[in-house]
Length: 235
Image 1: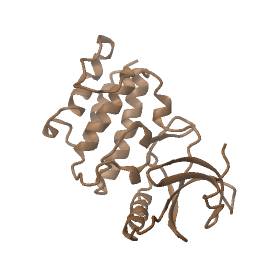
Image 2 (image 1 turned 180 degrees about the vertical axis):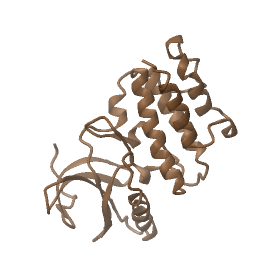
Image 3 (image 1 turned 90 degrees about the horizontal axis):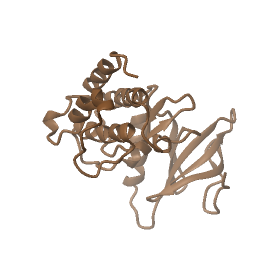
Image 4 (image 1 turned 30 degrees about the vertical axis):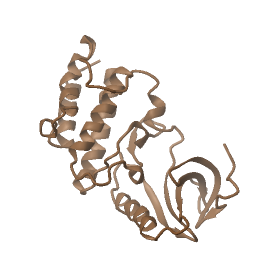
């Protein structure tokens, strides 16, 4: 575990920073402990940049506030957010097991891939009901709890802030599902799944349809289709 860097705050509100988790795109994630009970949390911060107006920092916090209202088991918990000196911060659930990306060292067993797809679709159904489109889904956005449960996170890192079509998230979910099944990242129209995975072909085809109108109509429809496959006692 690394120590806080010289430029990192040693404290943010009622939290003591103990180490740095990662940094990218003008943001940094720190490991911290909550004063009241010592609970480990992750704190994402964004410093204001020279000459930068306040709206980007306000949007950073507003997005966290919107996600924080989504109390759901498959969505990462957000405990606090706000401003401190020249930075904005978001205090969220800490995942020592890492993300789904860390678990994808190769193909997963089909039943496990289907279970994870169901959890991911459940999370998307909830955020879509609230009018939120992620727009940048990737394995790094699905965190893994120690019991193996998925939790959607990383809304502030979304790649397409202009997208308002939830089916763009479904396509991204298909890309993730294909990688879970095959261990391969799609770089072109995917090949047919091998015979051992034929029971998942319809799911892959509908999620990855080039025409959005031919994809599943909603994340709820994806979940219904996944549950139908699981009900056939797939091993």
